[in-house]
Image (cartoon, rainbow, N blue to C red):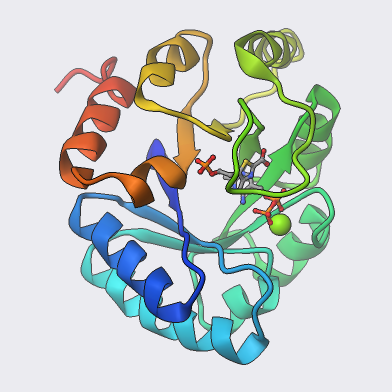
Length: 212
Ligand SMILES: Cc1ncc(COP(=O)(O)OP(=O)(O)O)c(N)n1
Ligand SMILES: Cc1nc(C(=O)O)sc1CCOP(=O)(O)O
Ligand SMILES: [Mg+2]
């Protein structure tokens, strides 16, 4: 089962990215998606080369946003692909079955397509407005999520769905109650002054149903 909390990295420079990722790992994140937009191949490669051993040290999964070839080159654990990125089935043909491939969805039909094409998990969003990403798809809100998850159930589509977009601690319980598997967050972790406490609180809510 994939970790229920995915941290999506932030930072304007490689230094900031590395710092933020290191802080998130130190605070207990076990899954990092490196998202470093509008950079040269050389810069993203250099950053990924540093992030990979760091994630290994912290026993965290490491996936790359957008760039399948970078994920392949540095043998990351996988890749996250959006609706305008490389198609999931093409990516699967290149990466093989052992790697994680996540796909962005905004509608039930997106999820149907991704599952048909071999996607491992879905990033469904946006939950609400966020400044982290430009050109957002239509905002879903809790009712949008609920409608989509009900359609999945009716159609017996089983794939872990991660809520994304402006997620905060107070959103976790209602999202879990409607059947969301996990959350993918960026801003709340990057900006928190008490990252360890926040991650512990998020995990307590995300894993509340797991009996230990
Ligand atoms: C877990 C997760 N879900 C959705 C996204 C968004 O991907 P995409 O639509 O390709 O947008 P960018 O992140 O590339 O700007 C994601 N990255 N992760
Ligand atoms: C990267 C991304 N994708 C989204 C989508 O809706 O597809 S929302 C988003 C930003 C997530 O960061 P934050 O937790 O700071 O809002
Ligand atoms: Mg993308």
